[in-house]
Image (cartoon, rainbow, N blue to C red):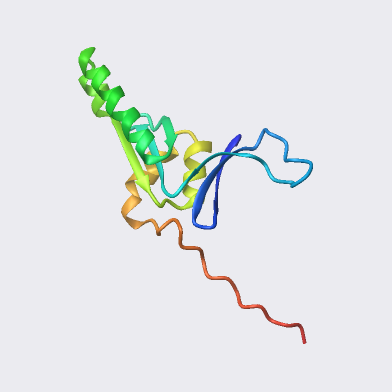
Length: 128
């Protein structure tokens, strides 16, 4: 649970929770800020290889697949899958924290809600 994504003002922020918050602001420094998130993983094992901005992750996956195919590991190259988009933050964090979870999320991808839509909040009610 060291790395954690949070959604703030429509952007995904990645934090390393091992770092102490700033004494002045009380906030941690973010490692990444991106509008959408991508996860590269192994389809059979569910191991997360990389996560972050879609451009970087797609590039990593393409280069890794190319090197694996050149080395004769066609099946291993074909098992690298990239999922990207506005993913729900709780699902995204579970992928980082729970081994193999990304494989389960991938199977449910079509039914997941848009990641940037927040659940409606209860209206403020003044106590009587």
